[in-house]
Image (cartoon, rainbow, N blue to C red; front, side, top):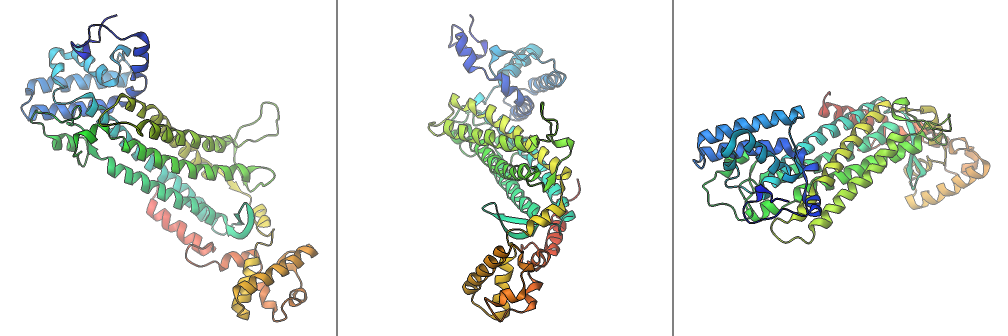
Length: 462
């Protein structure tokens, strides 16, 4: 077993087989190839501009890196496990292509600042893609909300019928959640956008590098201010995963509702064959597997955040090899979130609500009881607590007779409060109840339609 030639003269023997197995990361960090090449291009150009390497060497390096990019794109690049990671694989291949000049590329940098830079670039691109997908998901929700601004359904607390709302209003709640999700990702992106490149191993470098130049070339706002922090920081991954975990929770909550609503026992929604599967033994089944899988992926995304928090919690400054564990879980988690967002947007566009079934359910459970209490307060100037108690007694009477509130005889209500008039029936239907909720953020159809239109104007067309 020979030494790894990229490590230099300190080692005279190669690693044990198990050491190679645990140490090698090329199986997953090859996904950083584009970022590694971009960082190397920027670094080489800066070295030449600062007179640290010759322009001829920089040109040769640039040409070699472009050739490697084509090999990777074409699937012919020879990824080799003995070179451990994407950085050493690129450097080794560059030496094959251009000879000794390749050895000048690593001047004034380390794999420590290199990997931090690569992964920041990768996470930044992932955030940008997730933002686009969140916008599309919100657009799908707002479009469906506008179409169903007046479709009445039961609103729930404790999964018990509470008050009637509209389906559009319910969907707009998820638009708001996704807006906060986008905000969290935007915050994470803003904070991550500092370049570690040039921090070198941990202490900076004695070469006269221009870190502002490389930061600008790579689209960063500025160089990271402290070299120790630059190479050991993984907050940018943690923040992205935290935003992803909260987003996944929001998707999972909606997925859970889709699972419930598509059950024949509830039957509020129907999904087409595009987002359901059948059973291998029960031919009548239509399973909401897409929603169930979105719900399950939340666990994997939350798990990735937990795992990296645990990896980082005890690490002294600066770089530690433990940080190699920052990538695989994060990459899988952010890919799972992207898949979940695509599936949810597709299901929203695909779903067909059963308006009649929803309306019938909205009228069950005496969901307009609060409207009766509010009427007693407005019309009879009754304190709300007294109105609440009186309404409870009237509901009990209606329940005993097996009728809805708007079907209970006026005379029966007047047994509890003689001042109640026939005007009370104007607020007891579910349609009137929903229409009356005109306060800011309320479920009145005109509110919902206006809010859906506002979001669609803001989100624009696809």
